[in-house]
Length: 238
Image (cartoon, rainbow, N blue to C red):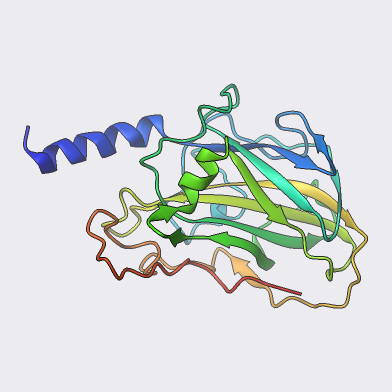
């Protein structure tokens, strides 16, 4: 088999075997059950159309199941989004290591976290990781047994929020809509914030364009001086 053909075969296989789901949250020292307070799908497929409303909290072809639970979180602390290949997978089956790309997290303040669909304005980025010293952020999460650590800002208002955790795989990103985006939304009630800050917010869909340099690139032909541009708005800080 020719080298390029072999590469295509590996990429095609990883498209099937390497998907991932944000399955549970760790907050205030408590590990909540799988699907608790998270709108999880049963299928682990990606979103690829960044203009789709399903970019907010996932959706077809991965229909999500509503949750009637809200997770209490203290502002100024870390939470951990736990990623797994499927709802039944263990810590050694997070996502295919060939799924390389950035990792991000967003918040949206809402009136009712159990019913808000997440579509539209109000989102702000609170965490991001890209490419550093030859290592992609997705591989760091995989090495950390699927644990994606997210700091909740201490300066935001108290209230109910959606937490959107996201992993992006760029192995097919040579062409438009080739990037695979994985996201789910957790339902939070955040308390203990100072409320001093008013984050600039953005719309989902709308935070990404299909030709963003962080979503349209060949990760197999990177130059030694490559600087990755993480997609989306700047990260909010207090």
